[in-house]
Image 1 (spheres, rainbow, N blue to C red):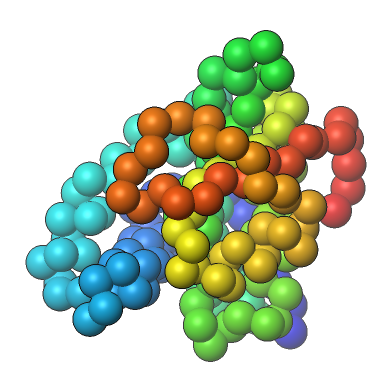
Image 2 (tube, one colour; image 1 turned 60 degrees about the vertical axis):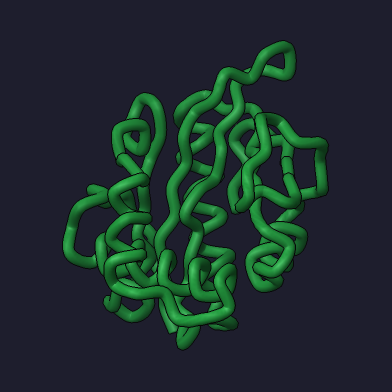
Length: 169
């Protein structure tokens, strides 16, 4: 199985399909029932792509043997005294493609993009019930950190990772 991950506009049909699948999964887990199409539409409407393009971020789509099966984004944050940071967001691998290396390929591509935008560290927040995502982050060098921004109902645990310059992963 071959993965490749490339930047892609947030609004392409494949990116939109993947973002819908992401929202359907995380919302369904949160509510304990399948999310409706209207709920997914509202979630997407509240997710503007304005900062997921260079120089303020990036959005990528991962393809497994040519089929779009993963996506993720990053947006640059004010890093304060720790230097520039990039926040990972909307990281998703289709359930049928999990375990095939897509998470690693996606994470590596997002790290490269973050370095290219000048980030010195990556941060993210997630929910405790998103076990697969949390496992992916820890496996790829992220460690639990204190909250780096105001919390909300979907932010239960925070992770961070220092980026080494010019690291090839």
